[in-house]
Image 1: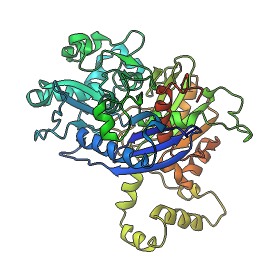
Image 2: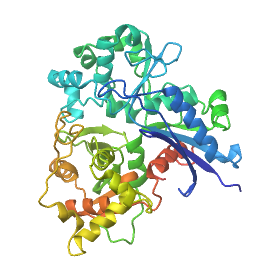
Image 3: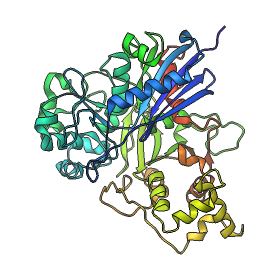
Image 4: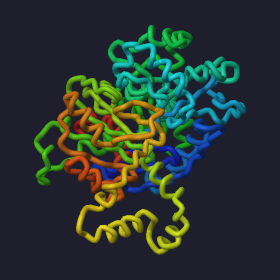
Length: 475
């Protein structure tokens, strides 16, 4: 019997990646392509959905080279929670003052709507209880309000569809407008089983979104991994180099795909405190440009300053709380590249694989193996929330933070019983970053055998949609 495969596609902040994954969850091949980021003005970050889809097609074709089309059973997408705007003809609508139609994506890290977010928080509406009591400028309602207030003629009045980027990708693949519960619950205030709260949108001045049963932001929803439409359309299949009708699963936000790809890992025999305990004793940390802290529970838990509880947003049937730090990997890069000694560092690290492996060995030498490297900074205190505090203080203006331990303590106080950390993402490949988290939290840290957990999580969606598995949990 021929080997069967699943394709996972991950659209990150600055690149698109794809993986061909076996039934056993092993990566057969991967590919990556960069994507453009424009910053037309301070705190405005935009992208092109056309370019993103083209790059998705390029990487999928690369990873499926040499594989027969009928061997690929399913496709899953994950992406950043950026906002895509299309018109009634499903063509791009500009989100910038200059009116460039191809720049139709407001990125997740775009903080242009900070003032709108503060106004929404001040309404004190009941939906805010599920986002930690505070509306973040990284969520979609304030971004939508900004577009209405600032680009009414050129954008708002022409827009017929507002997608979260993961849902845009699954629509582009299948022609199906059904949205994933992951995106709508986590970033748009949707709450199953009731659905949209019309009073919320009316209270913030976006009552026009109620038209036609909320068709502009999503009338139909389904859990992640649910099969969409009739699978790949003829056009999308041609673009991707796959077979028409290939199953496509409802998407996930990128961090949630990483959480899904790592949190269910088999850890038998490692004598960890989470062994023989429910999956709710684990926290997944997805560490990249920013860091997301994913904890799940059987009952809804409300954690001040932490997003959620969100039902079926990552694991169907379980409630998700999501803490996070808005800048981690990007901030480390900023600190290192902005340092006066950066040129000297580049010169000294020339013969190493990268500057961070050089820095890690340099720090180890400084510590003389007598103490933990993180104690080198015990008398130096830097609070690096350069891009606001996402959790648990939920203050986008704050320039100081206490990090993962602070988030863990807030979650435990609300009822979470977290005993083990599961890390994935680019920063989890840095041993010093991992060790410092273990030291600071006093918890064991697990790293996946398959390091690309986000791509594995995306492929799981395709596998579930293919009907090869009855549920996400059995995978």
